[in-house]
Image (cartoon, rainbow, N blue to C red):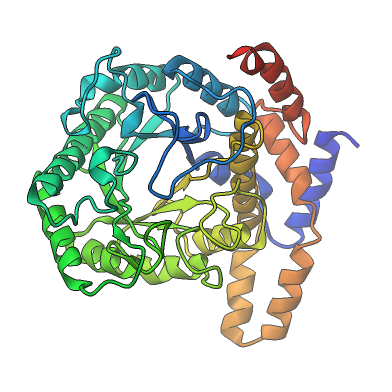
Length: 417
C-alpha cells in the first residue's frame, strides 16, 4: 500500500473517532524542538580539551566525531534535513568560536557566536544557550555558584551574566527568544554537615546574575535542577525544590530534565503541577537507564506520557521541548534523528487522541469507557499518518533516512581523522 493510500485509510479510521488528522499534522508542524549540539562532538567543545568532567561524559568511540564548528554545523544540518518540521539548535558556552585565542568563560562575548547566528539565520533556525559550569579548573571542587570562596563565585557569576548577554544577542538577531539555561554540578559526594549555607550562596549568586533585565522577546532564563550526579550523590545544592521555589518567586522558567529525577518519578505528572504556578517551562527530554545516563530518546511509555500531558493540558505554547542526550557508541547524526523523530512521533500520537471525548467520559464518571477508548486508540495506524507527514515535510519516511545517514557517514564522517 502506498503512503497516500495508507494515510487515506488511517484518516478515515481516526475520523470515526472524531479526530481530524489534517489538524493534528498542522499542530505538529508548528512544534519546534531544540536539538542539542553536544551530541555531535561528545560534549567536547572548542576549548581544546578532549573530554568532559563533573559527571558529564559521553561513552563510546564510534568514528566520525565532529572536531570543528564547521563539521558540527554540517552534521547538524544533515540531521535537521532528516527530521520533519522546522526546529532549533541548543548551544553550550564551550562552543564559542574564538579564532584560536584562549578566552576565559567569564569573558565570552556575542562576537564569539556570530558564526552560529549567521548559520542559524540562513536556515531560519532559532538558537538556545547554556552556561558551561563544568570541565574547568574552577569547577574541580564540585562547587561553582555556591563555592565558599567569593572570587570563584564571582568568576561563575560573571560567566552566567556573559551567557545571558549572548542569549539576548542571539534572540534579537534571530527574532525568536533564546532560552538561556543554567545547570551547575554543585553538591557533595558524601553527607554534608551544612546544607543551608551553599543554598544561600547559590540564591545570592542567582540574584546577582539576574539583576540585569532582558527583554523576554530576546532572552528567557531557565534553571535546571537534578536529583544527584557523579560526585554529588549525597547532596545537590540546586535541587528541584530549590529551583522550583526560585522560579516561582522570580518568574523564571523551570527546566525539567527527564533524567534528573528518581526512576520511579513521573516527570509528565510534574508538568501540570508546575504550570499551575509558572507561565512556561523548559523540558529536556532524555532517557535514563537506572540513573541519569542520557540515552537516546525512543518511543517509550515515558516519552508518550510526556507528550500526552503536554497536548491534553493545552501546553504546546508553554512547554519548550529540547533534547538532551549524548551517545558516542552509535552514529551521532543518527542519534539526533532517532531522538527527534521519537519525540515528534509521541507528540503526533497525543495529537491524534479524541481529547474531547476522553474528557467527557471522565467528567461523566464513565471510567470503563474511558479506559476502553484509550486501549482501542493504541491499535489505530498512527504510523500511516506519520509517514504521510514525513512525505509532506519532504523528509524520508520509515527507515529510508538511515540510508542517507550511512551514505553521509561514508562520504564525510569516516574521513575525519
